[in-house]
Length: 211
Image 1 (cartoon, helix red, strand yellow):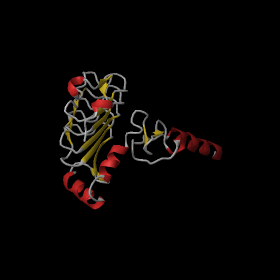
Image 2 (cartoon, rainbow, N blue to C red):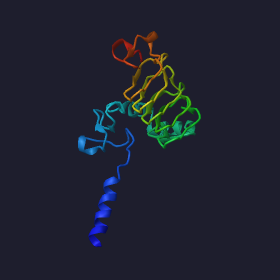
Image 3 (cartoon, helix red, strand yellow):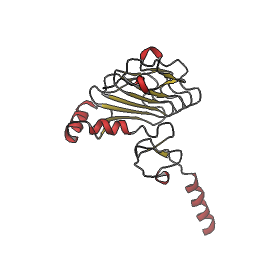
Image 4 (cartoon, helix red, strand yellow):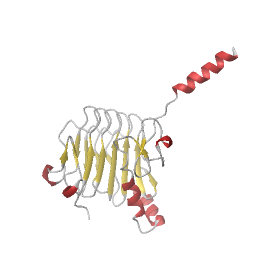
């Protein structure tokens, strides 16, 4: 009986495979990250198509006049999320969450994380000072994902994610559409579409006009 109980514990333990959110665990090598994630050049664990692009949020937070000021500004503006180092994080990673428009607050960096069938209406980041939008869930970001004039990073790694990307007004837009059937409508990229790359957008070379 004891052997059966031990085996049962091992089997249950073997089935436990939690999904880790991108850009939440710092790393120095591959062994520091969970399944499906790699250690990016910026020192954060993330999925392969996001790795190396977590740093903009940290840089935005560090660019504030002082950490206390950054946190204070975020806490005042970020009424529908939580503040992490001055960044408003709107967590829609739970399946089927955030079924109405997701609005980033004005004047602070914003990060939106959308899980399976989450963010079914618009994700609007036009007023934030910087945007990182992760549509990693199946069928996530089912309406338009829209940025303003600031630098914008959009990752559409979920199957069928990101119906329509609109970042044509951004000074730079990095949008990747790695999920199966992601970005089914043509993305609106900066410079009249000249900065399109595949189904998404690029900020390489002259496609980055941010000051």
